[in-house]
Length: 266
Picture 1 (tube, rainbow, N blue to C red):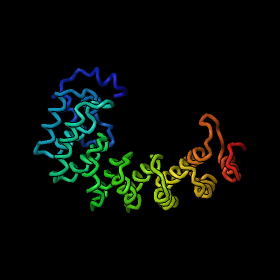
Picture 2: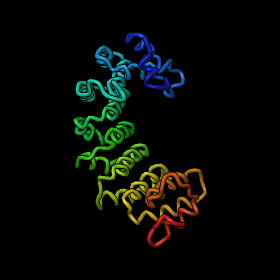
Picture 3: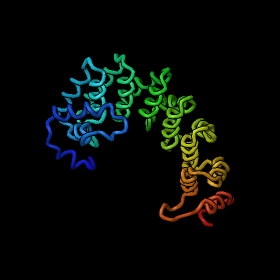
Picture 4: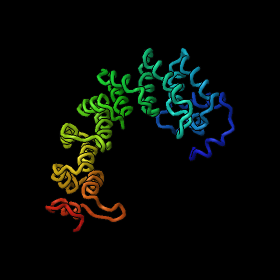
């Protein structure tokens, strides 16, 4: 479904949409989804849809529970409907759910919901033995600024699972209101991460904070051959405070990064 307006114009009943959604919940890449029925339900966001999602979340069938949880996480999207009730339901589910796939879906749903009441429950799961649950926690805490949440994200920045490291590093790196030596040192430790996306996010975080230690890493990365140079070029532009409309090649960026005053002139 290409737009919110088209989703809202879908005239299928809630029951019909749920039937269609049940067929697409296992379709990982979405290529077989018929009119993206789940997105239609989420966009509709009515009490009827909420009640249906709650009923699904209490089903004996794990697939149905996953569908219910998915809807609750984004009900009324992009504006939220019944956010506190959705939060209550998801917190109850996460406390008692035994199915791995449903639990993972619930963690991510809490992230989509973005209710800070969920933080304590999510933080408790940061040391889960399941890689995808830790990945979900890092995703769900993205943008959180409480001391406890930041502490959990700093831990997850060193997680052995690259997807967990990536989301944790993204969150810490992009939330520039969070700063200080501990934050910057944590980002610097990820500068040479084995995963290129983690490394790029770490350097972005340092660049946004104008930490001069980022410059040799940026020069090396944007000067190196490879397909990911644009990731680091964006970080260099951020550090140099360059106008987004003006184009600079990697050589020009490297020259500017070497200038003593780091000005934006070539």
